[in-house]
Length: 318
Image 1: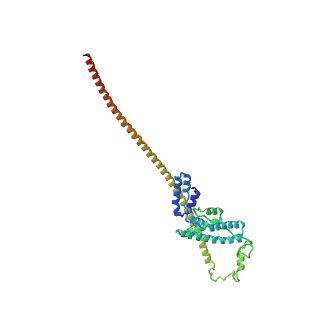
Image 2: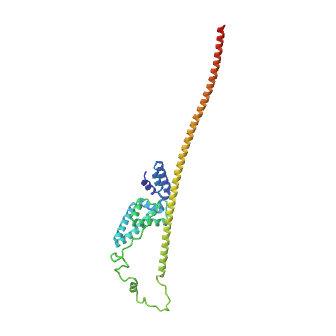
Image 3: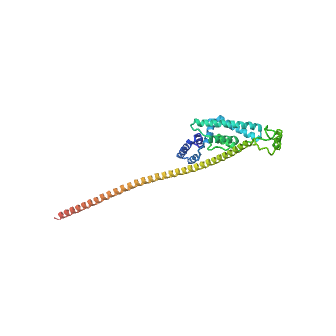
C-alpha cells in the first residue's frame, strides 16, 4: 500500500464516505508499522462537493475531460500568439464544453443519489474555467484528486486592432466616441432644445440603471464567493487541526495501552515471584519443623543409648 494508491481510491469516493475510509486506511498503515504513511494518509483533506464533482468527471468521462484539457492548451496558445479570430472561436467552444461537463457531472451526482445545488455547480464551472486557463490547474484537475475547487484567473482578452477581425471599435473602423455618435445621429438631433420643452426620460436611462444594479449584484456575488472560499479554507484548516489532535490522542492511547500491558506483565511477574517465594518459605518452614523433630528424636535415641550403656556397665561389674 502506498500514498498514490490510497489517494486514488479515496478521491473516487463521495465526501460522505471519504473520512471514514481515510481513517481506516491510516489505521491499516499504522498496524502495518508504517507510521509516516499513516500520518500522510490522515493529512488528506476531504473533498468539497465541487471537488468531488470534478474528480468524478475525470473518472467517469475521460474522453470529455481529455477534450477539455486539449481545448485549454489551444486557448493558452492562441492567447500567447494573439490570434484574435481563433481565440474568439475557442472562447465560444469553452462555454459550450464547460456547460456540457457541468451538466454531465450533475447527472452523475444525481445517479449516485447525491444531487447538488447551484453553489457547487457554479464552483465546478469555475474549476473547469481554471483548468482551461492555467497549466498547473489543468495538471491538478487531471490527477483527479482535488480537495477544493480551483479559482479561474483573468478572462482571456481579445487582441485589439485591425488584424483581429473585431467588431465595434479599433483603429481601422469609422469614427468613434463623440464624433462617431454625432456622425451617426439623424438630422435634428444634437440641436439646442427650446427651454420650455419638458425634459423627456432618456431612452437608455432604465437600461443603465439595470446594468448598474446587475454590476453591483455581480460584485456582491463575487465577494460572497470569496468569503465562502475563505470560510471553506478555514474549515479545512480546522479539520486538519482536529485530525492532528485525533492522531495525537490515538498515539497517546497507544502509549497508555503499552504502559498498561507492561504493568500487567509486571504484576504477573510479581505474582509468580511472590508465589514462588511463598512456596519456598513454606518449604523452609516444613524443613525446619522436620529438622526439629529429627533433632528431638536424635536426642531421645541418645538418652536411650546412654541408658543401655549404663545397664551394660553395671552388669559387667557384677
